[in-house]
Length: 165
Image (cartoon, rainbow, N blue to C red; front, side, top):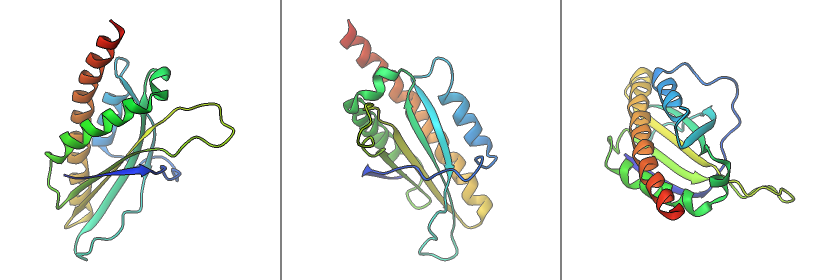
């Protein structure tokens, strides 16, 4: 999977409920589980840019992810650690021809805001010979992201517990 890390970007406003997608629903259930280290705070379907190869159809969605514990959301370094781990894991997953993911933190808080909370934007784009194939490939990509998040959460929990102890 092709991985790109961006300095600052924001999640586009959702224009309604996310499209029905079983892979997305399974991802949301796993990531938002009671014992999960993470929470998805928003999902947004996107207008994917057409491929240079006109015969490829794009499919894209983004999720906005934060830590389930509010105190962790103020630790920018923890997000950087997460991004590095995700990038390394995702580069080894899937085809770079048909899947790409962009990872980055939301922009700095608005001026005058007292909160320093950060969120991770995960933008996944797939391409296929048909719209249906692109959506299926996207589903495979979100499974890779889910697995990378679960693996990273185990490592982060271990790191956090060693700092607490």
